Length: 247
Image 1 (cartoon, rainbow, N blue to C red):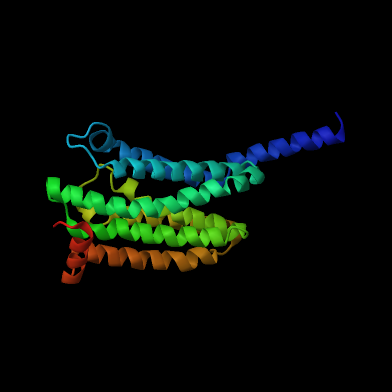
Image 2: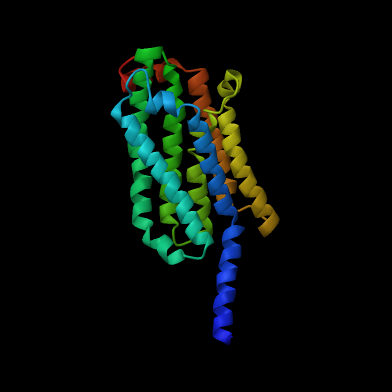
C-alpha cells in the first residue's frame, strides 16, 4: 500500500471519527428528538385528524419548521463529516428557509391565537411567547448569516437560533399544567445552552463570547414574555386584540 493510499484511508477514518463524536451533531439530533417527541403528543389531533379543520397556514408553518430542523441536522452533519464545501453550497437554501421561519411563524401565531379563541377560549396574552420566539430566532439567524465567515461564531449562533425554537417541542411534553405555566419549556431550552457552555468550558477552558452575551439576553426576553403572558398589562391586551382581531 502506497503512502498516498495510506493517507487517504487515514483521512477517511479521521472523518468517520469526527462525524461520530461531533458535539454539535449530537446536540442537533437531541433537538430533533425533542421536536419529534413533543409534537408526536399533539400532531394527530392538531394536524392529521383534527375535529375542527385547522387554517392552511398552520400546515405551511409545520413544513417550514420541519425544513429548518432537517436542514440544521443535515448541515451540522456535513460539517461533522468534513464536507464543508457542500455545506456552503447549501447556504442559499439555508438562508431561504431561515428567512421563511419568522415570516411564516409570526402570522401563524396570530392566526392560531384567533382560531383557538374562537373555538376553545385560548389565552390571548400567550401570544407573547411565540412572538418572542420569532424575534429571538430572527435576531440570532441574522447574526449567524452575518458571521458565516467566522465558523466559531456562526455555529454557535446557528445552535442558539435552533434552540430558540425548542420551547415548542418541550411545551408539548406530557407534563403537569403547573410546569407549563411556570415556563419549564424555557428552562429546558436554556439547559441546552448551558450544556453547550459547559462543553466550551471543558474543551476550550472558557465560554465563548456568543454564549456569554446571548444567554442573559435570552433569559431577560423570556422573563418579559412570561410577564406579558401571566401578568398582562392592559396595553398588551389591547395590542393582542388589535393583532388577533378577537378576544
